Length: 469
RNA sequence: GGCGGCGUACCCAAGUGGUUAAGGGAGAGGUCUGCAAAACCUCGAUGCAGCGGUUCGAAUCCGCUCGCCGCCUCCA
Image (cartoon, rainbow, N blue to C red):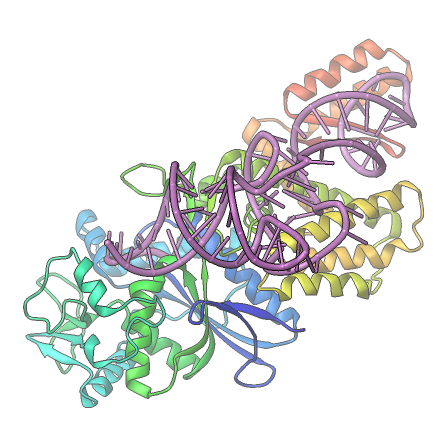
């Protein structure tokens, strides 16, 4: 059985069949660049990074598009606060985003289009809607009439009447229906604008994704993704616009990742618990964060905690230590991965990207490989090491060779503690000397001293190695 | 009010009808070690919020109860 994906549109797991054989077209809603990215973004980003990697592993030629929303109310507001321009704000946070995604070890999408670079496409899409009677003007604004689109609510399973009953937003009397949303907004004094058939203005939030996904992927395309919160209204509105314009479905499968809370609370500015990606990566390996997210299913809501992240870090190190042992015993000679193991991995991942099960399998194999290595049976080990590496790699957890991973970790720890490797090495040698002379008390004293600095010693057959815990 | 989700061992977390309920972390005991560390071995829920029901058989399906949460408004 092949890949099965939970489709928000149907509410069920469905067999994945690409629209064009051997090819997958994937669109994921990116970020609005008005602020630094936080852990919640990281979860969404990592979810789709793993999906992207896995689809590629399956042999699909994947076109992955993830946009930047670089013009909207929040960006403009921020610019006004800082006496800057929307353009400058967007530019700054796009640069920060790129730094974060590199630090997280994300693969680059095929395309990263920006809304402001697709104004022509947006305008022509709105005109098309106008021609079909699926847009109406109110002064300099253009709205989409939701009542005119029969399928409105099909993604979020909402009925218009119920939405309106629950609507607590102020009703704009100029709109035909309170749920109608802006395709184009007239710009006010001091706001960025583009010339258009409706005067000077800027695009509404939803239309950019419709315009850009169609441009780069066509319509329909295979998979549209994003955070759970985007189901309504963003994705619902995208569907309405795009399908009203072209009379074919927008996307075949809709994938949404679950939300992340922090210490049981929703992340929000007012609670002051917004945790930036950079804050975490300052003291943790990106692989730890990735493993943390991978240890629960992408659709489950998750609660972020420092303890949880620490546990995940421990797990990642366990994997890397095993791989390091594997390398040293079998050499780096590339054996072909043991097929049966890859098959097992594939079965787990094929079930709606079940990464918790995939991780369970990996830990199972880590244990059995360690046993094999303990017994000194290196003959059958190399293909297992290779398989383990492959699995970990597909999940994006193996970003470096194991040795490089530990070096990176050591360097950062020493920097944060203000220690130099020379001092550590000196103490290790001093202890070795004491050990050779069987002055155990002195040796143990040094070890305790190092332990207090967060450094653990391992006396192995090949000499003493030190690790950062 | 409408729609949806969740409650599995000390903690995290898979599993949605059928062998002994994955895996990780923490913990306990052991092997190894001068002692450690790492690794390995062993142990750990007779039970899956509670109560009923369906079934030859349920954590898994149905009903009720309790508790928690999300969305319906910008939000990954």
